[in-house]
Amino acid sequence: MRFSKWQALGNTYLLVERADLEGPFGPDEARRLCDPHEGVGADGVLEIADLRGAEADLIVWNPDGSSAEISGNGARIAAMWLARRSGVAFPRLHVGGRTVPARVGDDEVEVDLGDVDVGKPEALEI
Image 1: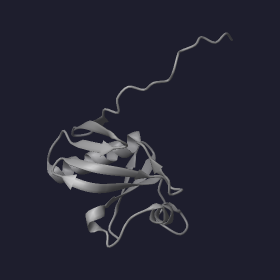
Image 2 (image 1 turned 135 degrees about the horizontal axis):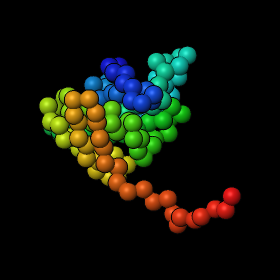
Image 3 (image 1 turned 30 degrees about the vertical axis):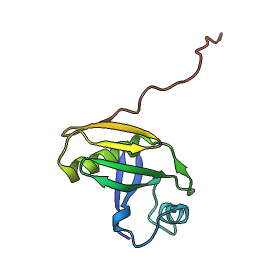
Image 4 (image 1 turned 180 degrees about the vertical axis):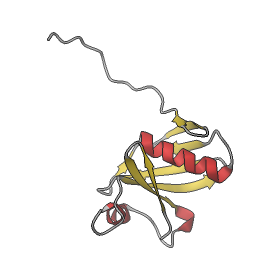
């Protein structure tokens, strides 16, 4: 299995392309690869499920084999990989039911994950 190992702000991810895999990728493969003793060791796996120029479908796998809706650092890694691969500074990822636009510069990557709803703000007395 071909993969690359990336790091973003202390998080390590393995990136795999579905097109390079001989079979399906799933929870068992994610657990095995992320295990620091039996595998490579990582905080997760980024699976590029479909690649179309400067756009890609992304599946984020947690080390326990579950899938994640999104990972900020994972999205930044995938955007950098996609920008390098496509030569486009504004790649787009499709992950967790949303489209994530990105901007890749010489030494930084920005991803727009949208607004965060933290519920109704409340003041706490201390």
